[in-house]
Image 1 (cartoon, rainbow, N blue to C red):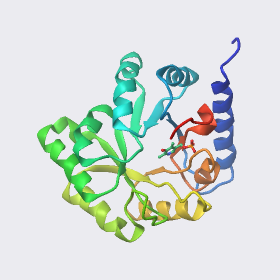
Image 2 (cartoon, protein in one colour; image 1 turned 180 degrees about the vertical axis):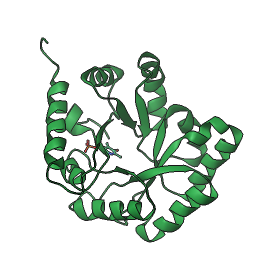
Image 3 (cartoon, rainbow, N blue to C red; image 1 turned 180 degrees about the horizontal axis):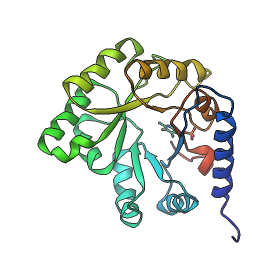
Image 4 (cartoon, rainbow, N blue to C red; image 1 turned 60 degrees about the horizontal axis):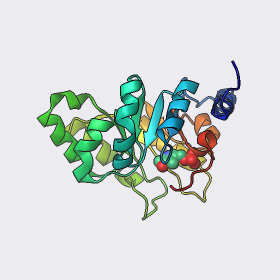
Length: 228
Ligand SMILES: *Cc1c(COP(=O)(O)O)cnc(C)c1O
């Protein structure tokens, strides 16, 4: 191959980091997938990432995803797109049309909005969801606080019949991730949930060691963002 783009190099580095972290870590999952956090990245960069081998992307905003993704999906139908940012209840329907999986289910009203759409269109009932847990109990951050997680997970699965596949968290920026990843893992274990979306550019190796099945990587793959 001639002159691989730098993105292939960063991807190779991250894959090596994942492999290294997995080795000798009894808690590590058998599969950890990279989700490319592509907020702020133009379609050209996203398509370069697809050509480098990335099959899973995450966007934070419905509107931005709406502008970028229908055209990319038309060209690359096998690529999967997850919502990883907060969602307004009145955008639930739009989000379901755009995203394969919602990783940021974080409150009863939103869960009820999804369930209502499922009733209207049974095909949507197969959609997958992660519940976002506010492991650091930060008032400004989205997510269910740990003490309320068991009740909320039961409400979503038993009462609303949502297909909850796992949990996600964004630990406080100024704390080590490990205790938060351990807490997320423990809550998921209690409910038999297999997917753990945890770890970003700065701490994905720790997250892999603690059992992440999905690491959400932006900066380490694409370089510094101009805006968040
Ligand atoms: C932007 C973003 C990421 C990626 O962050 P980096 O530190 O750039 O890797 C991961 N998760 C969420 C929810 C994000 O918004």
